[in-house]
Image 1 (cartoon, rainbow, N blue to C red):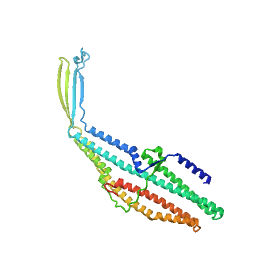
Image 2: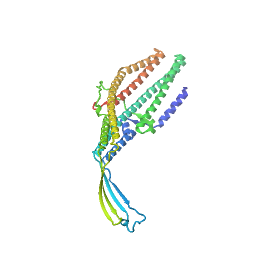
Image 3: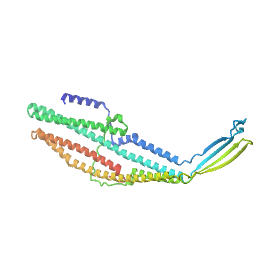
Image 4: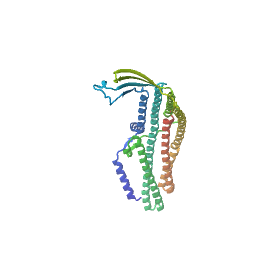
Length: 417
């Protein structure tokens, strides 16, 4: 890229950046926005509200039925004159009430209550998993910002070296081939910078979704520092898996399936329909009469065998799903603990030795090259090594932060790091 074009692009990007507003967020700020605007949380809350309504429905007694029947209507003999009560028709007014037996209503309430508890635990689990995803998106933005800063510093260093190289070429201090090598590395640094800027935009968009601020994604800036390493390696172990909300939700769904199975079996206990009626007959001598009735179903063709078999199958499915959830929870907890130990060890090695060594070597190479005691190739190699180690250290900080967040939110129940 020609120098005038590069300067023009730099000026345009500076002016664009100056015209943009920024929104600096700590992780706590991001969590507050997420709690208020998370679509997944809102959906889970709506599911809880629906389950609460189902509990009300399950506990309701069936409404009575009222019926009015009119018979003995004869258009040939006439309806009769006068008010309705004098018409020559037979009027029957009846009231019926279904009486459930076999504790059906209690079983419906039990099943609906278990599903409500499951929905509440699923809300907690959605909070847990989405909080982890939010934290990972926030740390991804922090990592993208660090990479953007490191590649920007590297591009600026190569720009200065290239300017200095042009001056030294005029005085005969370096050969043209060395200037070409500087230009090649400058171009590589510019490409890395552009890629870092693209990665930064992607990270901003990903975080903006959780915050409900898609239209302001490019304004987001992560303002927190990376979680510090503990003074000593912590003892990382698995917490109480039974306290995880996804495990508890699966257990409640199993209880609901048991209640539904018992309700299906209770259908074999016959319900009773009681009714009372009033009859007003105007055929011949007007008469008023009263009566009552009792009706029960006849199990002639089936006794709910299909419904019972279906609920038995659903119960087996719910039990297997609970066992699978417990196994997956145990595995994810162990993986989170292992990942935390590995990330902590890797970051500790980088920050207590390798990063400092790379910085010291690069600084010495810059000094030696300036004094003519080192070749350009060795200097460029030292710069590339430092940049690689710096980016690796930034990635290690992100890996440790993500592993720590995952262990705390996925596996750590009742354990303090």
